[in-house]
Amino acid sequence: IDYSASEPCRKTDLKQIAAQILPPLYSLVFIFGFVGNMLVVLTLINCKKLKSMTDIYLLNLAISDLLFLLTLPFWAHHAANGWVFGDSGCKIFTGLYHIGYFGGIFFIILLTVDRYLAIVHAVFALKARTVTFGVVTSGATWVVVVLVSLPGIIFTKSQEEDSHYVCGPAFPIIWKNLHTIMRNILSLVLPLLVMVICYSGILKTLLRCRNEKKHKAVRLIFAIMIVYFLFWAPYNIVLDLITFQEFFGLDNCDSSNRLDQAMQVTETLGMTHCCINPIIYAFVGEKFRSLYHITLGHRIALLQSPVCGGPGEQRGENKKETGDKNPLVGQGGG
View 1: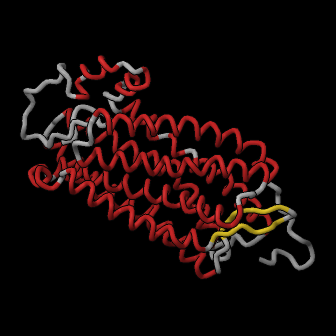
View 2: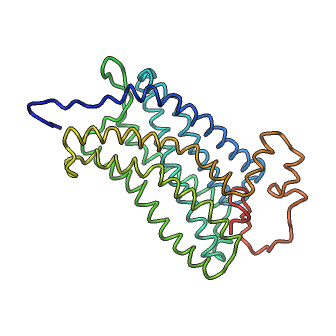
View 3: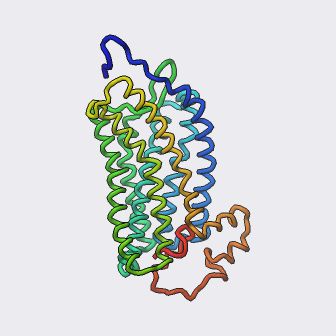
């Protein structure tokens, strides 16, 4: 963009700031996120035994976050020292970034639809919300995730810039516009549409039948969706403004500088999201304390926990419920 024919645009150099802030920040996010999401995986596999469709989706959401987390040490090194892992490494870790990102979105959407079916269409849910159906839809979702991640992988490369290499997007202008539009549809429009439709139906049902168990079952998934928007929506909005600067009348030096700064801040905020979901489980999922039994190796206490179906479990509950007693969802999934 030609900001001025007489005076060149002096862009604020954010690389020095990023080199100081991002490595320690991403390192902390990686450590806490890896530990937290691994605990979620262990709970779902060892304790819950993946007995419901909700368990399957929560497991895949944790796997998506772990894939995203694996890239953080490399982006931290990139910020401090440039890209030293070659063009193949650039594509691989960019691929993991996109797959983890889109995987997280799609499994949050599936969890929202799962809550909707369990509460609004409870009778249908008894037959439809099975582990088998959860595995099949998860497999299909991963295929879609890889497909929508391909443009970001293909049009990313390692290239020399200011005497060192950087790993970043290299989209032709048309593909850049299409990719931004696709990302916004999948990242903002689709989740928002699903949330409005599903939670409108859920709210009507809960207002008709006061059921504290169902309130608790919805609270976790709603919190996950809202937090996702808080962390990633700002970045996607800034990405829109940068991609279509001329359309929004921001093709001047001052606006470009501000957008560069906003991009750095919002992308950093978004990339810290991958360690947040386990924190949400700890605060919203009442039975998440079983994780502490796992970390401390209290096998006896774990076996006696109601979460794992030990002697303390109340077996006289209504068998007509959906049976989705997830430790991360509270008292029940239906």
